Image 1: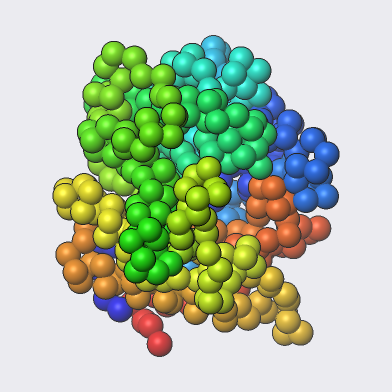
Image 2: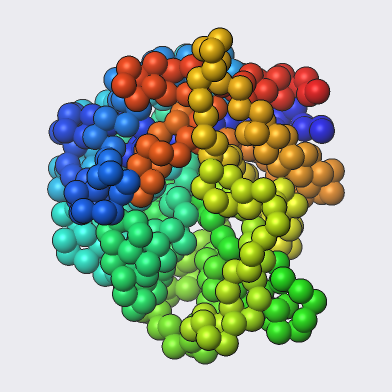
Length: 439
């Protein structure tokens, strides 16, 4: 495996999953605070009230990041810490926390990669309809402008949205994530408003004159056909239209895929929206974990269904398909005509980690996963794809949304009773990778 000297090695987390301190620093309630109180919404009713307590332990975590050789830390800013009413007055305590975090990272020569939105919408805005209503676009832009003004001098890379597909389909169609809505019409409106809010925030960023790169982090669905049957090939294309083209094409100025009209999905497009959504971005981030195979299914309203797989699966039940990463990034790069840099903004494996008798976590399974996916990254670069960096998910074991604390993605083990951090073998593996030594 070969990586350029300027390849950006990073580790990633999200505010609600690691910060804790949900009732400190003036923070207002988010949709996840509310969702976690719904019986059965999360495993055992678990929540992010304490999480990994990074709000108080960010200095310790910054030191770990530097110790392992990472050059960037991707974290998210909690909207609930910056604007306590969702809009309006700025909370100085929230601003100070993120400035202090960035300063601590910079002390070690680590870049600060800030995600503006990683799912924790202020509940007061959801009470007005959230992402399903157009007012949210202006609210997000107001929030983004505050972040650019207050943090623009200490953030090295900006990401507007994390995983629009999850925000919309899982939050507003399936209801498995906050805000727990099950309404296809709201879902489609949310898709449009998330993309529009992203673009309007980028426009606002350009007006500031700040020079750090800004982009978006997507998780898209690009499945392979189960067989060579033309019906299965068409099913895979349909799935890609609904789960990938829906988000990627508008960003590239290609509009929404025609499948929307065929399925009766209506987008609340107003004059100038599509031109705005195509606002130039500096990079595309991709969060990749697995690839499915699909087949035609006339009994499914979507027209396709996932099929059984032979691959070994992660603790999340997801198949391990490293070459799916190659296919997905190649597809995105081809769609962008090779003109937009790409970062892997999340990649990792949930493993049922245990502390061994020597007080170590020997997570060889995760090392194998990472090694295979990094080999794909190396091949993509060799094949001319502008892949510029890789962020492992996650730096820390953390609150895994509806799964609570039952799934561990971290390269650092967290004892949730004591908050003790222990480096897993996979952390040392990545340290060696970053240093240029690979077995």
